Image 1 (spheres, helix red, strand yellow):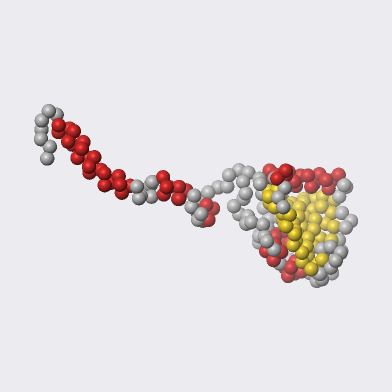
Image 2: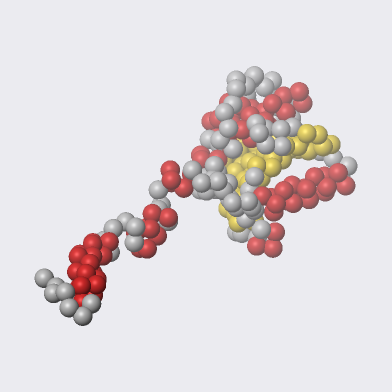
Length: 221
């Protein structure tokens, strides 16, 4: 006990308080409120926890998965045949393109369906960009180039995403601006009838973007 002399009681009380606090301070070093524990919580790899945070402007959309590593993950060939409504004899080809930092592209995959040696009858290309603005810029360049060539261009949205159909004598394509990702679906003329081209392109684009699709009317041969 502390004796009351020369003002010592105050000092003694401070010493006692400090002694009592030492175990508590030591215990706090193991608590989740410490800097190390907080860092682990802030940078938790839990995808559910991260998905609750809004994506920063210009960053990769959290709803999009990494670019597929095979055509089965883009659109299965059986689904392409079902949507087209006609057999597509030939091979299915997969091509991965390296990033192009100059235009902000981080990757590209292209799947060709029904390639019998003269090129695919149906082609689906997915491009991933660093930002939504970079993706939009490439869509603008594509549309401007098509207009300069005199190609037919008309709007054709796919779900929540804006899209445009571009046609020339040999092919018809649907270009979609999907956030940080762009999509181009191309069908060779004659694979389906002209009246079926728009619905076939839209259904293939929806599948490639992981959007729900309705019933597709069989395309005439």
